[in-house]
Structure formats: C-alpha cells, structure tokens
Length: 68
Image (cartoon, rainbow, N blue to C red; front, side, top):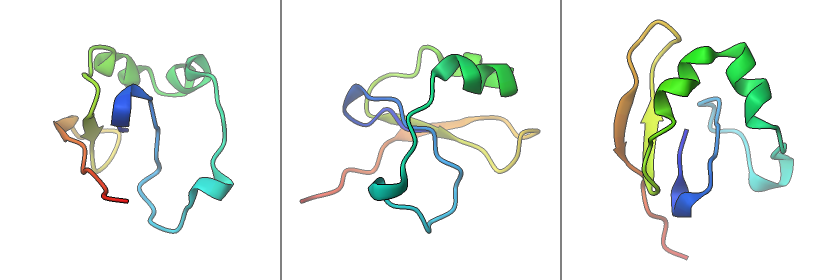
C-alpha cells in the first residue's frame, strides 16, 4: 500500500500490472476483507506499508519517487 502524493493505492505485490488495468474500489470493501488495514489509517502521504503475508507485521517506509 502506498500513499504517493496523498492518494491511497492498494497493490497485490505482483509486478505485472499497469495503470491501464487498475480498479477503483471503496476502501470499506478492502477493510471488510482485511481489518488489519485499519492499522494504517494514520499512514502519512508519501509513505508506504508492506508485508510478506497477512501474518507478518507491516513495514513502513517512504514511497519510492519515480522521475518522469
């Protein structure tokens, strides 16, 4: 999950996706499936949280900045 420029992005971790196949989903649907996402409600813009599996703790770091 990343808050690049303040926008929330929830990613599955696979590298085979692009912006052209993104889906708009209400965050409530995501937190219904994974209540641990609520632990990240205070995640600051331009930071990300990731974990290896649902049983691992969240690791928070700054988002990678991509140069255009």
